Length: 296
Image 1 (tube, one colour):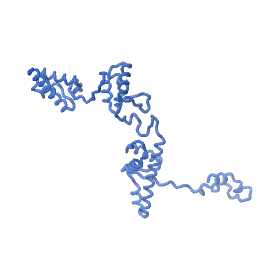
Image 2 (image 1 turned 135 degrees about the vertical axis):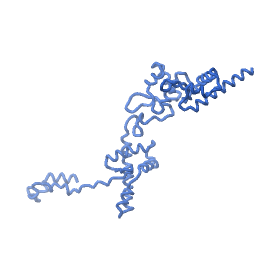
Image 3 (image 1 turned 45 degrees about the vertical axis):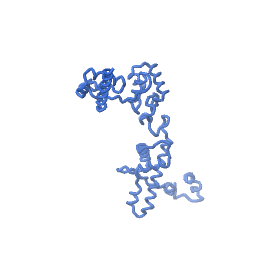
Image 4 (image 1 turned 180 degrees about the vertical axis):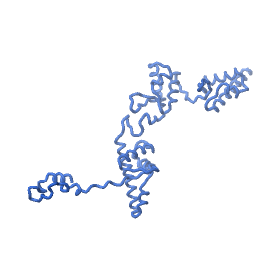
């Protein structure tokens, strides 16, 4: 009885040694390296320990470039399910928030279409994985249930149900323009006689606008600086905002309206010299004058 107990203790110690070495080797360790680092173990004890750890799914064997097989810690989460579910779950887990297409799952697992769909349905029911419809595609891809998909899949903040949210974009452009215009107006009031200070004080960092939008809770979704930069790019192209080399922005000067006197038809009329009130050619009978007055 004591010899069996000693044998079990030896096996546990051997497993512990191999496991510690695998944990320390981030990129994994090949069999030659494992042998050199466990000189106190026989070849048989080392292999038994390795097989036990493999069966317990604590370590995996991974083929490195050049065909060398390495022992590596199993970073995949173990789930309560069938082998097929575990295999599919592991592939989806490895894809992280980029997701994985069903074709890749079929190639990676070797399951036929019916088995694959049945297993995926089971994982979805258990709330372990979920499907995401990628922007610009009718295909579904799979990611872990608790992960947020990559922007490349969803299109980011400015997409809703795979459609570009034009109303949201226009609202944000208006908010950015109004905030920048209020800062420019404040700068003019604070430094009425100092053009240089007016200019400098009217510039703001994009982070200030992002903070303003967040504090006012103008959006139901988080707005990142990257999202705001995309909005500001549109505003710059529209001519409502200008940006300088250091990234700061300010509202463009209001566009001056053209005086109606500039466009009065009399200025370019070839018979203006003959135009008199009550004459055949007169302002009262001039169609150009009537149209000009109607547009005022």
